[in-house]
Every structure is written in structure tokens, then in C-alpha cells.
Image 1 (cartoon, rainbow, N blue to C red):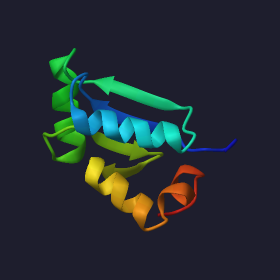
Image 2: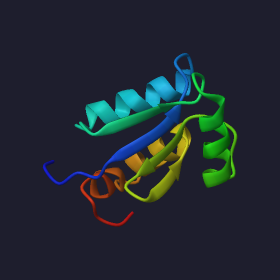
Image 3: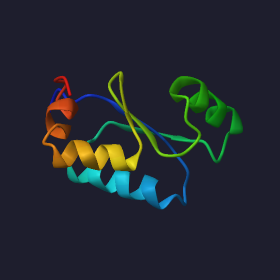
Image 4: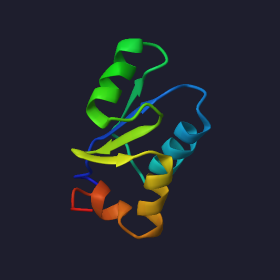
Length: 91
């Protein structure tokens, strides 16, 4: 995927859902994954809450699209909508 969308993920180091989400994204060939570690900087967790309205991690963005968490990411995969989203097409 040469024109793949940038993926941002608010995460912590030990969150099993963050790890699962990252594994799926890497399996899908994502090379531009920006991990934002909210466990290292509390201000980033507040930024995440402001942007998403949620307090749990992971919170995943593909391009400007807010996917949500791990469950939503896997739901997109099951529905066949993750690949088009990663390649820059609409969900």
C-alpha cells in the first residue's frame, strides 16, 4: 500500500487491546503507525478525551476517520471495510 493513510493510535504499553489492534494493523501492512502513549504523558490522555469523548484505549484514527477502539477496528476488518480505509478510501 503505497498511498496508505496515516494511522494514529492513543495507547498504553500494557493494554492488551492496544497490542491486539497494533498487531492487526501491522499484519495489514501499516507502516505509518503513530503511537501516542497516554501512559507516559497524562496531558495526551486528556487530549484523547477531548478529541474522542472517550477515556479508554486504544483510540484509533485512520487518516481523519475515528475508528474507535479495538472492537471497532476488528469489526471493520470482518466487514471488509478496513483495507479500503487504510488505502485512503471511505469506510
